[in-house]
Amino acid sequence: MKRDFISMFDLTKDEMHEIFDLTKRLKESQKKGVEHKILKDKTLAMVFEKPSLRTRVTFETGMTQLGGHAIYLAPADTKLGTRESVPDAAKNLSRWVDLIMARVFAHKTVEQLAKNAAIPVINGLCDLEHPCQVMCDLFTVIEKKGSLKNITIAYIGDGNNVCNSFIAASSVLRFKLAIATPQGYEPSKNYVAKNKTTQLTNDPEKAINDADIIYTDVWVSMGQEKEAEQRKKIFMPFQLNKELLRTARKKYLIMHCLPAHRGEEITDEVIDGPHSIVFDQAENRLHIQKAIMVWLSQKSS
Ligand code: CP
Ligand code: NVA
Image 1 (cartoon, protein in one colour):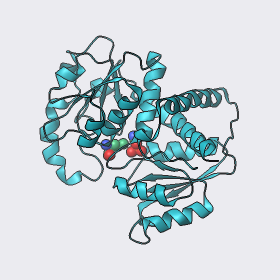
Image 2 (tube, protein in one colour):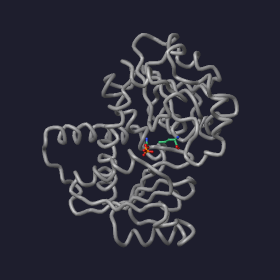
Image 3 (cartoon, protein in one colour):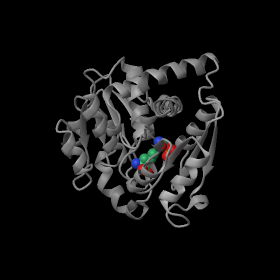
């Protein structure tokens, strides 16, 4: 049976660790210049309804390094659901390519793609989750800290797609997660209900107090541009700046999925400061993406 990766809830703890181990091996091969064309002659279709730098470049580069090929389908190319129904697009792509990665507005769209495709479908971000990002982030934490044991991650800002994927991941992997959002911008109630251990607060100091990792994301996600001015005012007390971080532990690490809106959710001195690992984190998108594609292909064959 084919496997998809639509949500962090799709993988067991052991499966996540299989992917982390594979990521480590693929990263080592890449660094040493050892050829690893595991997906030779395979094709990935990349369907985008929204813009991207990291997701697009890492999936495409990853596929090249694995010996395969990636096709970029811009929003105007496919016009999912308008030019053609989502199920029909999934059925067509299944006849030609080996994998689909989709970045969409609605979670339902990526679910429909997965349901109707005969090949693995990967969620490259939707309104509900960003699972590839959070796999990358947790791999990066393991690299830096050795494991997720006794690790506390503080997520500060908007209770958005990235935040929901962290809640799902923490319910599977059991690391401690503290989330601080403004009132009314909490993460998905369904996700919180599935992970009773998540600490939710409206006080950023309280969340970062005991954190090994302090994580933030943009205050205005793609598709929310109309709310930008209002959000920027409401979220200001949640900015990662020097003053807020004075209350953190000595050895904290700063993470951000990027793109960063410098001067909004994070200041220059914090993102460029000695605690920041954001570009190591961004590099790992390449390695995790490769592992996710290889793992899904092997499990589906
Ligand atoms: N973090 C991330 O997904 O970046 P892009 O939006 O540039 O792909
Ligand atoms: N929450 C952000 C993540 C960008 C990678 C968004 O959805 O725009």
